[in-house]
Image (cartoon, rainbow, N blue to C red):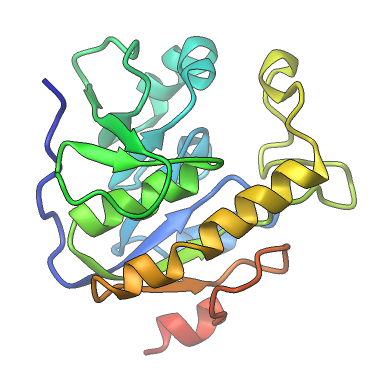
Length: 206
């Protein structure tokens, strides 16, 4: 049976740390004590995050030992083959919108979609995105950690794919707002349009 996500932080602000190259250790360190969700290899920069969400089975296949070593809290996966007692597997229920059943997540184009959905399950009323670059840095980096293994990256460094993923995340603004949840982009630069922007400084000074 799929794991059901409980309400972890009622009426909270959730920070989602994606894996884009703009993520810095300094910004991440400022989020300690907040409701933090990270994704895929985010355990390398925020091992203390409340939730690590793994979308891609390739990430689990290639980095399972690393994940289990570094991730200190809840590990959630949409990969049904992520077999381990520490991993909570949820069901992928669709490509668009937000799933209300607590055992499921909608997720398409980017793991950030699923992270937004699990933030809603967890009780967030405001979701802040960091590291949602949807593009390659000037130095060629695709992620804050450089690049994944070549067999994972194959076909991903594509401007059209990045644009589709960014548009998909922007398309979450309305379905989230319909549920009383505000989506905010605090990424340093990047190509995500259509999501209201605020700086991390301004958010943390509220």
